[in-house]
Image 1 (cartoon, rainbow, N blue to C red):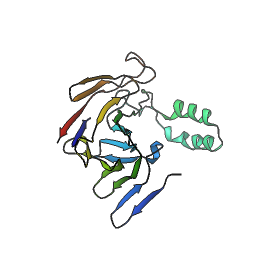
Image 2 (image 1 turned 90 degrees about the horizontal axis):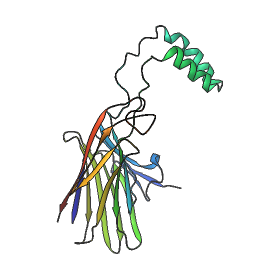
Image 3 (image 1 turned 180 degrees about the vertical axis):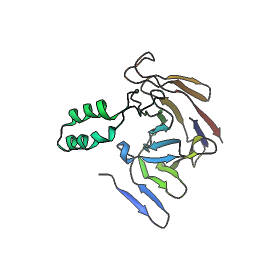
Amino acid sequence: MRLFISLIFITLFFISPAQNSIWFNQPASQWNEALPVGNGSLGGMIFGNPGYERIQLNEETIWTGSRYDYTDKKGAYKVLPKIRELLFEGEYAEAQQLCKDEFMGNGNWNMYQMLGDLFLKTEIDGKVTDYRRELDLEHAIAKTSYRVNNVTYTREYFSSHPSNAMFIRVTADKPGALSVSASLKRPKDAEIVASGDEITMQGQVTSGGVNIQDVNPGVRYYSTLKAISES
C-alpha cells in the first residue's frame, strides 16, 4: 500500500561519493541534524522519526510587517565601525540601541517565520531495525527507511518547483501493513481544519502576541495538506 501526501504551501553520518548522498543511522535529535528538501520557495527539514515524523515547513513569503522605506537614515554607514567595535567589546545592548537609532530605517522590524510543522504518526508494534535516513544530493530527494516485524517501511520526500508543492510518498512492502495519520501545527495565528482527506491551515502572520490586532501584522497565508491512498 502507498500513501501520497502533498503540501501546497553521538549521531553518525556517512557520505557516499559514488552515490552522491549523505546518510544517517538514526533519526535527527535536533533541527541541525534534520535533512533538507526544497524548491527555492517551499522547503522542509526532515527529522525521520519512525513513529512520529516531524517535517518543519518553510515558505519564503511568511513574513511579518509591510513594505516600508528603510533608506531614511542618510549616512548610516558612518556608525557601522562603532557598532562593530561595541559588539567586539561585548557591549551588545549599546550596539543594538545605536543600530536602532542611527543605522536601521524607521519602518517596522519585519521578521521571517516558519510556515509550521507537518507530523506523521505511524503505529509501530515491534522493534525498529535496519534504520537509514538519507539525502540524495544529486536529485534532492530525502528518504527514511526501517524494518518492523519483517516489514520494510519507506518514506520519500521532495519539493517540486513546477507544482509549487512538497510530496511525501509513504510505502510498506506488505499489504495492509501501513497505517499513517497526519496533522499540521503552527505556534499561533492559524486556523486549522481537517475534512475528509484534506487539512487546511490559514491565517495572517503576526509578531509580538497571539492576536491579529497585535503589533506588526504580516502576510496572509493558505496551505493545504492532501492524502492520496494507492493500493
